[in-house]
Amino acid sequence: MNFLGFQLRNNLFVAPMAGVTDRPFRQLCKQLGAGLAVSEMVTSNSLLYGSAKTRRRANHDGEVDPISVQIAGADPRMMAEAAQYNVDEGAQLIDINMGCPAKKICNVMAGSALMQDEALVAKILQAVVDAVPGTPVTLKFRTGWNRDNRNAPTIARIAEDSGIRAIAIHGRTRADQYQGNAEYDTIALVKSQVKIPVIANGDITTPQKAKFVLDYTQADGIMIGRAAQGRPWIFREIEHFLACGEELAPPRAVEIHAVLRRHLADLYVFYGEQTGVRIARKHISWYTKGLIGAAHFRHAMNQLDNVDAQLAAIDEFFLGYANPVAANDRLIYEETLAA
Image (cartoon, rainbow, N blue to C red; front, side):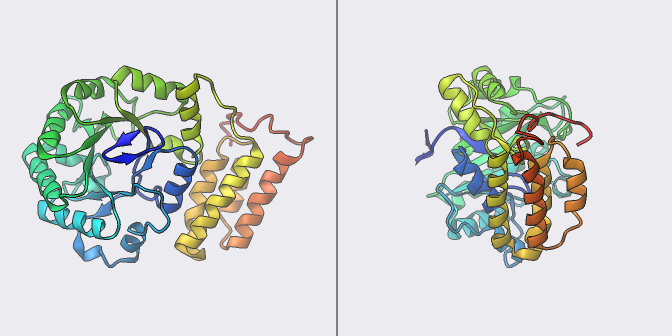
């Protein structure tokens, strides 16, 4: 797929998720089938550029092109400066966050709260586009700021007029947060009204759902967020289904173990051992969700505070699935609410 001048493996995108889509996660998703991964958002507050967190989020060493960085904020000048800063740090695409519903973002009129002020949206988009003339700028937003004000079509037209090169739309309003079901009618409407690429996002959890959303909205691509947590191979599953119409067999326990091990190794290097162990806990929880004995394992694992102990616990847990008498992978994906 050619996307804004970049040749991508496919039209499957990793959604930006705060605290999740760090460099190790983005790299893993790309290795397992994603065409493009957008970074977790970077603040537009220039006072934070020197913080360890911001420097880490701007670290793209070894990352597969194109490098897409999401910025968030409500001040046009500061957003323009943030775009310039990240391009200087290696960003090849700049994505603007107008989709985050989190209170700490919306309370400062950033994220999806911006959709209430269309005039300010236009100023921010134009400022960012003008600040990085050689870099494509994209925009992620929601269907509206509540169900009575689904103004995504208006925002999309503002974006196109401002020089935004592509848009991603989450099929919920800001007021919906992540509750209820995503709707795709608004995305389909937007797609029919603009000429720039439209990426559909929200509740895409299976290959079949991915095909349905693409067909229903006629979107140019799909963006997957929470469904990839602990399941980064969802991208290869969707890629295969879209190409062949057949489902791939789910990964066996030995592969899940290997992917998790590889992911953790990258986390330990990226964050350092102490922080890496802490960050790893949520990923381990996602990878083992639904597996027999996972609840007890996660409780015990969360008490561990060093790399060796964490890895030993993981190896011991997956050893049970390697034992043909104990498991033989037969229940690897059995959903047990207790777990």
